[in-house]
Amino acid sequence: MNLSPAVGILGVLYAVFTIVLAGLAVYALVLAITFLRLRIAELKRTAPPKR
Image (tube, rainbow, N blue to C red):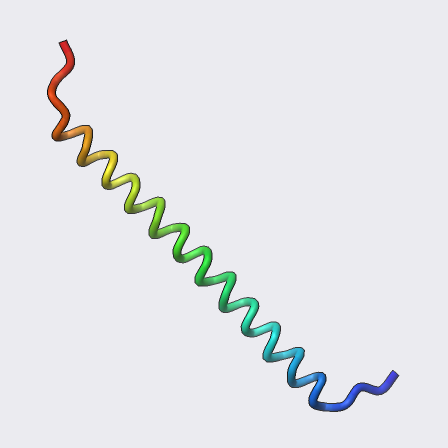
């Protein structure tokens, strides 16, 4: 089975595109977790003290 070079190039581009998308998804997840942790800490600081 001999594939043309275009299929190989497209395969490499697809793999690179998929890896970049996965990296961006992980980055967004880490940012969201960090933001939520900071927001929760801020809300706890400003909450009135419990009796």
